[in-house]
Image 1 (spheres, rainbow, N blue to C red):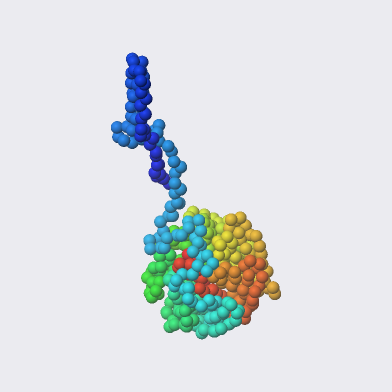
Image 2: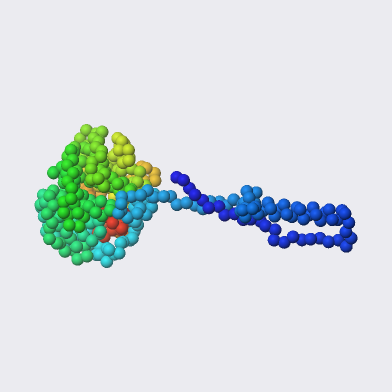
Length: 415
């Protein structure tokens, strides 16, 4: 990076010349006076050249002012990155957007087998409402503008909108095979993960009108996350054990690779706070794939626990919580150290799946996929705070509202 600095200089000039007189003058005195005057003229010329600029000999160097690191230009229309070293800088505790600051705090649980959404008050840990929705709801997804929660009714081929201000469900919108839902960082498109259709469907982010359909060669497009500049995103393909790289603006697949594990089943995808790595949970490999999204080279692997499934970032961007659905545990990954530091065990076991972190960062909420329950976990100790009965097959639970300027989708990826 080329840097330009302004160097301030100080010029020393003679503002006053003292003349010494003797009562007696003679040749030596006059010669001395002439020499003094000549010296004075030379100093003045040295200090002020003909151009009026200070010469090198009289320039006092000044330490350069610090220059802020330039943030790479993002996808046109995308809100600028707040901190190039921390993509989650807008997600600090309680930092709610004016759009959501008056929304009541709730936990929304889609029950895949019951075709309902259970609503929980996180303060009391009590179920306060059960909302009927379409067939096989998979995830509850905050819209890009934060104003709507979309329930993905996969086999019902609809999206049910919920107003998070009132908790009321609106009229369903026809959308085919909406297993999961994301939004481009510029807020222009919704991206439907049409898992069984083997398509990525780009739709208008507000009306859900189909804009472009991108057929994919892999099976089970599932979860995703975006690069720091928003120009591409990485997609997991659950049933064929593959990853896709998609150009956001062109709406085209630009990369595909098979994970180096027989029977791989990639699930949730999250980018690191510094934007240098993508983490992909794999429920059959029992751990995380760590990928350089820019090069899209073969990823490395980190074991975490049986049935690794959901990935959630702490409010200080230092840790990532990994739900291990097959063993009833949550592993904690430390970003600065680059290693696992803790493992929390749910008492009496369980099947922790998808969820999110409370607005204050103190509680991790996870659905219990095969136990018809929801878990509230203290993020400072790993202690189970509550185990709440809900409908059958709870899946993509959303905690709402959460801090952030806009949503990239899933159960809440905020920037």
